[in-house]
Length: 90
Length: 417
Image (cartoon, rainbow over all chains, first blue to last red; front, top):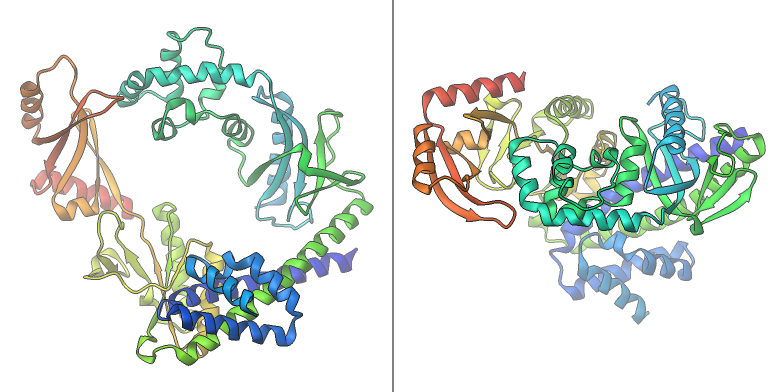
């Protein structure tokens, strides 16, 4: 039982840290992406996705990206389309 | 919050579920989250309940809908300073078969009444929630449909991938179980850990993707655009709370080596577009333009501090700086001017004018109305006619008058202390 409680706390801590980082990243991405054209955004997202695929199973990445585009796109409406489009081209 | 306080609140809540006349029938009450896991200082008490709406609600709501025909009368009572329940009780004598419990009327504010139509302010959810949690601090209530809740074993249930422990049910109203047995607690943790692991996996992918995105972007990002990353912290709590958190932010900034005067105070956006750099009001300096802001958050103090630390550690990799800018609450005071309350803010003081809409009594001539207000030192301008009220006028007062100015300054000084 003690192990389960410790594990619970540990995972919560890790999630909290990651969520904070994601929050900062989202905001930075949001600001930085303003300076790029749709074509540049498309290529940046494709590249970033390829980095992910090196370590994580592609189907999982694809599933995650399709499910969570609202997360990473934050308030950038066009980014969602770009992510979906870039996944479609693959 | 203290665990003992939350336990007391949970017992009180269950008593209310059993004894309060509500528009819904509550069938089960569940607990989950940090309180259930046994934390000594849980953040709050996470509760959800399964319910069905009483058949009689349709009838009650039809009666409540009649309030829409009394919009203008309600507005008059509001101007007179009556509470919502007092005003509705007055109006209800004109409504046929009025059978709404008096308690329910205290669950609605004037703001909600005038947001659209009076009846829209009353819904079973709002009434039930308010009656159940009134004056119970730290209780976070969530209502779920009974269909979405599945039984696992013992008193353990699952709702939308969230394990929850049954503390009370209508089937056994006298039985309240606040502590699970070992099996139930173990089952809860196993279920929760499974869900958390999935969330962790998602967060890892999200972070990795974000980092990769930023790395790629930095390669192509125009160098001259790399500037100041501004973290704006919205704080819409009371001034006192804000002062405490501002001090804490400064302390954190000192600890991590950022200049503490990076804390900004801003005017209310809708009134004043100037931004002020301020350690205190006396030292404030106006900026012509809004500072560039890359991060906007209304997160809690703890999160702000962790984001700050994070920004600082990532500063090199992003090539960006970080700035903290909490939004200062607009300080305001109320001037009582011959029975009319004028809310006056620092921005008004700067602009030298304060205005308020006043309804002209039906039986008074326009000329006479203007004359009366002019005698009190007000200028009457623009008129508007509302559906719910009579003809209203904008009544303005010149704040450059010495005695008025002194009154406002003194009032604001008291608030700043």
